[in-house]
Image 1 (cartoon, one colour):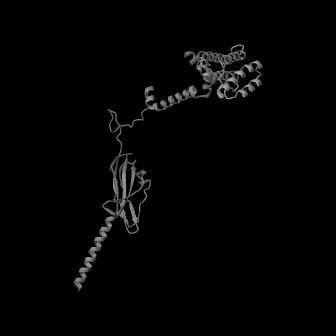
Image 2 (cartoon, rainbow, N blue to C red):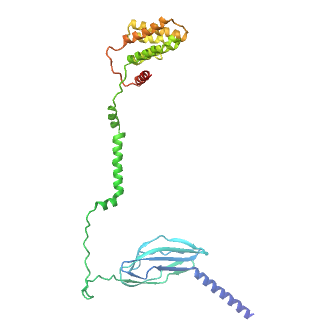
Length: 342
């Protein structure tokens, strides 16, 4: 029984030692530098890392501005957390550091400790050799009489417009685009410019209303409508010619008014009675032809024509006046030009 007991105790002790060894392997701290020898003032990249089981809580030791008084920490990067793909039970903390030294000689970085609730880990000490920068010597200088040379003066370089354009081309392009935009706005979009430009547009030469009417009457007469049996068409066109003349020449809405309304408007506009009589007889006969299907005899057709011509001659301006550049008058001018071309 004593031999069996001793065997069991030995096996348990061995297993305990194995578990302790495995557990110790999960806690590991390391500081790795990319150079062990540098010139004075040269910078070193260092990577500080610690590994521990995910079931434990490890405190990452903060790094101060100096590791030792001879080695300074220039920059500290963010602490990263990651895992090993082959073993997700181990967590890793890593931090990148930038180190430098301005003291020549050999300097030892002491271990950096990390502590958890159950264990601890530390980095191995590292030795850094900082060497001096060799001093430039003249040809005749020796190590005994070597001198440190003064800082060289600033070298002045001649100004070059080509180099300036190469360095500032984008500002130059932006300035030219701004000038072009201002020029376009002032020349084509500014209201004052558009107003001044409109002033120089010459007014179209427009034929007076009575000349247009008389030319249309001559064209109507040449068609010989009532002589060919088209009495209604003849009186409709005759009525439209005199109504258009009144509307364009005097501003009275003749085309949209009935004969009675038009006659009243003429009376209010101080037309002479004899002029109104000439117009009233012609328009009344035209209404009878259009709406009552009256067929007048040849002399009546001729009289309507003559009365309209006489009305226009009596009411036209004594002196021909240039009409304003009105849209309705422009349309009448185009119509007369078409009549003449026909």
